[in-house]
Length: 87
Image 1 (tube, rainbow, N blue to C red):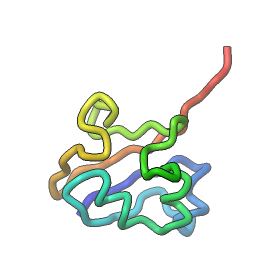
Image 2: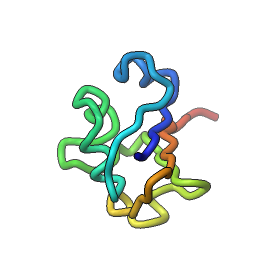
Image 3: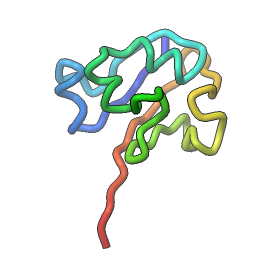
Image 4: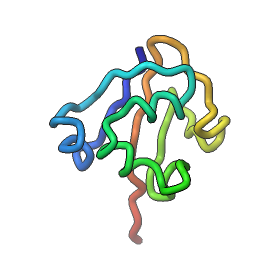
């Protein structure tokens, strides 16, 4: 199982859960297993990670790895964080 930790703003789309567990061998497969209302907030119409969403596997942003093709193993945890803008 893969754990997906969610920020407070996305928890209503996961029944209020701080983390959800899904199956998958890649980030794309893990996202595909999420509830559609949550998945729509993480991915765009083409299926890519939305620009304002950061997803971390351990200490690495998946954009610096293989993106949605980043391999996962049982017990991995993805951390979803929205981008923060301002100055």
